[in-house]
Length: 109
Length: 112
Image 1 (cartoon, rainbow over the protein chains, first blue to last red):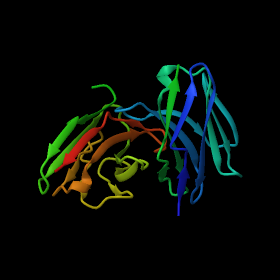
Image 2 (cartoon, rainbow over the protein chains, first blue to last red):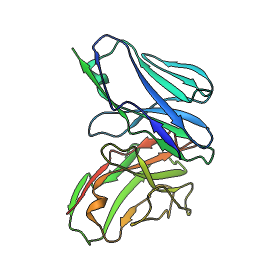
Image 3 (cartoon, rainbow over the protein chains, first blue to last red):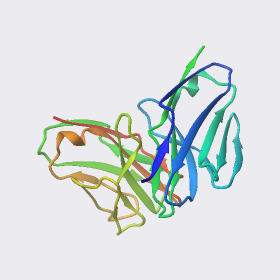
């Protein structure tokens, strides 16, 4: 079966760096996506990886290793507003999107 | 309208009743999706439409129906609601990969 695994919850300190892991087992691979979702709000697109390596976008970066079947979302210079859930999703070979359950990130001052 | 709009924002309804959740986008995206989000689970695709006039079943389609009469609108209907359909429903649209989608603000539906 197809599976996306993420930690349920993580805690980090304001100003620090945090790394959220996503491992996947899917029928083929057409790309991996990260979304941010604040409580009670809609998910918003953060990043897209299809090739191995790092994609950087400001304070947020996402790393992909297709051979090992994982991605890491790195958040630098954490701010209180970064407290949210981070959702990982993989598009399989049938162009279907498989979603992880999300990682709730708690930022403490 | 800017982006993608869902209505109602929240609703409490009796089991056995019919309910239509509305979704409208003004981005002229070809593809639209309906997801449900439940605590501890990832987003699950209910139905999708790749273009106006076509629809397809997702992971959890039972008890739901959709239509896509035009590019902008993609309503989701629960013909006879059951308590297990209590959830937060998100409509989304994309102009390419389903992974790069814009989401509506969600509809919190409670079936009692």
